[in-house]
Image (cartoon, rainbow, N blue to C red; front, side, top):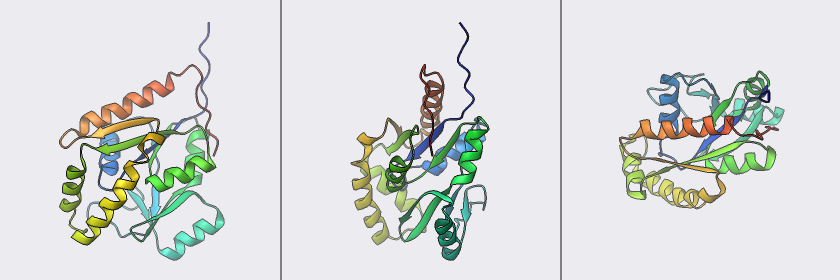
Length: 202
């Protein structure tokens, strides 16, 4: 019996509360040279000191972002902490059409939007080991003041309540990022071995 040909890519979404380590997880996967297309999100927030435009995010002005949204160039978009975030649709479509798997990180609000607009996507929820540890991580971010952290923690509680809507949960424990990466890679392998493989429709 011949194996079924798989000529289409799969799309994986990493989501979870702010500060849980979505960016760190994907950067670690890049360093491990995981064979997957890393989708670059567009955002209006200013770059952090260690971020590279076009690699970590596309840093754009509010007017540029609005133009992308009006043209229908964004697969999904959301506002978080007064900044706009959106996923350019073209790069995702091109990767999948070429048979490549793709992975992207979006917030919980964006994941909810994507569920209504697309199908066949694998949703992975990245969560902290505890609320206290999430607060500690946010405090270590120098760009966030305590009032902002309080607001983020309130939102994180709401986002954690959405966890059952995701198909997989990966816990990112402090000092154990390698384990979280291994869990995500295991999910990718499992999805590629499904008898009835998902068909992504954007």
